[in-house]
Structures are given as C-alpha cells and as structure tokens.
Image 1 (cartoon, rainbow, N blue to C red):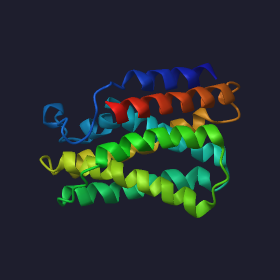
Image 2 (cartoon, rainbow, N blue to C red):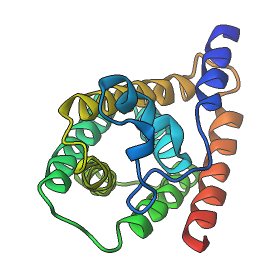
Image 3 (tube, rainbow, N blue to C red):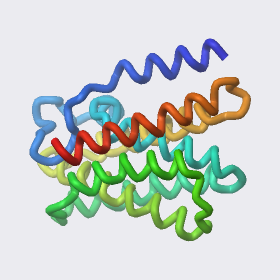
Length: 193
C-alpha cells in the first residue's frame, strides 16, 4: 500500500500548472521524441487530472468499464490527434477541456446512474478534445513518436487512476472524494482563468 501511494505521489510531482494546449506552445519542450511525448501529459493539470479521473471512474463503475473506458479514451484521443495534425481546429477546445476536468469531478462525486453507451460517449467526447489539442500542438513537429509517447503515458495514467480507486487501497473512498473536489476546483480555475 505504501508503495502504491508513493508511486502516486511521484507521478504528481511531474505535473505543473502550465497548460499544455494550443496557444501555450510546445516548441520549447522539444516534443519531437517519444520521451518528450510521454512526459507531456504530466506537464499540465488538465491532462493529468482527466487521465487519472478516467481510470478512477472506470474502477468505480467496475466490470467491463475498467477496460472499456480507458481503451475508448486512448483510441479516440489518437483519432483526435490525427485530426488535429491534419489541420482540424476547434475554437473552444480549451474551454471544452477545462469543462471536462469539472465534469469528471461531478461524475466521480455524484455516482449518477449512467448507461454504458452514455459512459462511452462522455469518455469519447473528452478524449476527442484532448486529442485535438495534442494534434494541433504537434502540427509543427509532425512527430508520430511524440504522439505514441503521449498515448503510452495516457494509458499509464488511466492505470494509476484504476489503482487509486481500487478497493484494496484502504483510503480509496476518502481519496476518491478528495480527488473529485480537486477536479472541480481545478476545472473551475481553468474555466475562469
């Protein structure tokens, strides 16, 4: 248990307040390698929190959702990134991403009965916005290695979220509630900032 908490704490050290979306630039980050792409989701609260939240939500829902939601997110995020790389741009992507942070907080906090198709649709919509933002950022890089690194990091963050919500972790309930409040607060800050 201490090992799992230590790993989660170490992951949180990688995150910074810096936003990781269009208008904030990645050119200075050298996002032209798989390593740089891998590190990218750890450098923005919006990415880090939503990736973890998808894992927590999947664990909370249980059953097939434990693999369906993370897999859907990664697949649709990759699709969104390819669309962004090809030049598709969505003017309100930043707002949609900030809203996804808050929405995940609400979903984790309220335990609303949502059917499977709606769960997958919500996950896909959030993934699409995150993917578009990544793809737009990567336009100047045209690096599939960086995209691959981002997808691996995303899957790892989903797995960490699953672990955080595991019933084997004694503090799972308190951790989940605290995490939901953090999502709401950061999402509100991002929407207002």
